[in-house]
Length: 404
Image 1 (cartoon, rainbow, N blue to C red):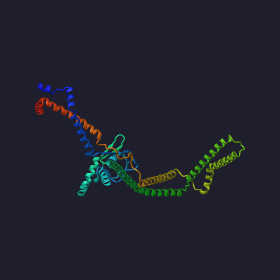
Image 2: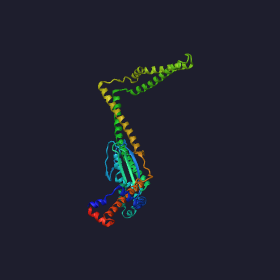
Image 3: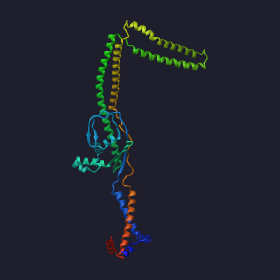
Image 4: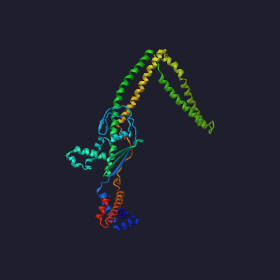
């Protein structure tokens, strides 16, 4: 046993001398492996090109439509009132659905791209399902849970096709979301039309009640007149103030007899007279109103005042509700005809110039290192067998197997 151990002991100098004697073997092995590896990498392995698209999270004012949502090949329908979000978690579910994949397979003729044409002639549905599976394996979705950025990775043997598939994911998702939004907007328009019809009828009834109350109680309502007078008075006071400020500034540079100052003074007098006349309008109007109304009393008893205020309040509430419904109806109608994007694309996909796999240089380098290491170990093994067998490789191999 000791003599065998001594025969297998190698010093660093022994190893260096061994490699020097068989350097041709190491070189030949390395050259053969590099040549074979290069042939496999460049002519046998199919390169994969990656195309990437990313979406920012977003929210929409519309709510989920009655069009069924798509959930990994299954349809889950229903109408839901509430805020619809275009969060990328929902976009991820839509993109990963069989409905979206089926649409992409048909749009880009992926059955032919994945070399399934022969099968498609015999079993078209089976070929289509296999193409959808190939697309699923070629696509990887990545969703950031913190900032909700959705990234779509597509890997195929053609750089242009990878970019087209990634773009088709975005277009199909945008189409589905737009259909959902527009479908809800149409439903919303129908709902608001129904409510508007009801509110309009209630408003007409409330107006009739107010008019009937005024006739029965001989009420003269001048609220609208007062508002108009106050608006005109405010405009005149503003113009009068501007004229006074301008005159003060001009009087510092012009003499009192200057025609410009005289003209400004006359304009100020005119505006001041108009303001004074309007301010006295209330008192004069009260006397005139008493004459025109032919003795119709404006003051009601407390019970009638409460009833009148309630009628006016109900009418005002219905008018505001009608205006609100009308504005929302126009907004919903606009949503049915707008053709805007339903998502924010951060990075658009484009064809890659270099494949992501295989990395030719790195792969050949790894093969070279492995080949050099394997050939060195092989040399040491053959030399050890020769030492044990004292020149006979077979004898040394039998001894080594017996020792192991």
